[in-house]
Length: 447
Image (cartoon, rainbow, N blue to C red):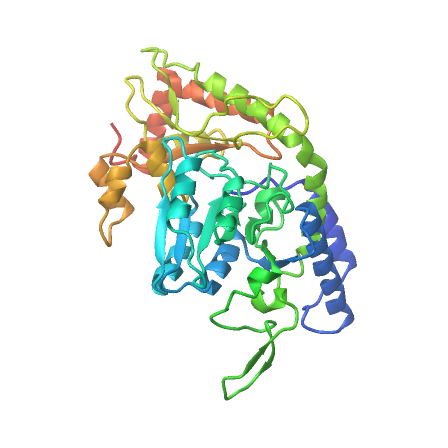
């Protein structure tokens, strides 16, 4: 979810390329600049091919998926009468678009989350229908392809339904495409946001908005920058935008030194992606089933409670789609069933060189749904801090997230299960607890 482990072969290939080549800013006609431009165009072609994009799509390189989503938010022609519809179980970068909508007088409407994340399809369609656009005022529907906290994949058909009602459609595909094949022929959304480091680990600092050219024509940038323009009158107000559509939306100089690595990374992932759903489904099934069997040695109570969506079936053949992602969000429990502080779990895992993410993982709506605290979330007030919220609840808030991806193997899962078994062991847990309290001061919510 946060970033894939980068393959050594990809780093080696890119290092060799940089040692043998001289790259230059693409806003020039020098030999080094032309090489950079050729590499950038090759990367665009490979990404479009990877997602089976028709000819009416183009790519805008950004810093990450967040920047791609922000680009749509700041440029979309929201106005009074417009509606921005999104799911409660969405990343903060999707929620953040509501600030642009509200600032321009548009309405914001949420599709509620189920107790295990995602949304009910009939509820989503009812919400979209109730707020359907009235021409010529444009409205936007943002769909989360896969939740980064609940492990839920939302049906992509809902985007087609929204489009049939007149919405423009935006897909947050950052958590979906690292392990799930996706085709823009099968799901022709107006725009989708991705981050390459989540797909294959390297390079960081490069994402993309893959977008229909017709949709770009509806977007209006609130400013301009170097590279996005052809002529600028100074002093004055005249601005002529760059000829290429993608250039009009790429701010300044693109990350030209690392775009060749995007091409190599796409080719690398293309080789392994057909096998990932089957392999990850097997690992996820073993992880979940084994976690559910681990009990405290003193009371026999479960050591963990899984909150995220659990797949109802295993993938058994190549090419079979997985119904969920490969993420487990859970909370750890003490022998009597009380929540153990997430900060203690994260500290204890780090002592075993296991990297776990804790907290709301930038998805407050999904976290509230999984934890059953939507009513408390509704009572928040302006200026409230996380510390205020936790003091009101009397405990640390959030989940522990275990993410499986391209580089995950059975040994990784086994180490996590061994760690959970240590938490279930009174003697081992006490040692970790004392270390945590001594080195960090513990938590104000520690029992």
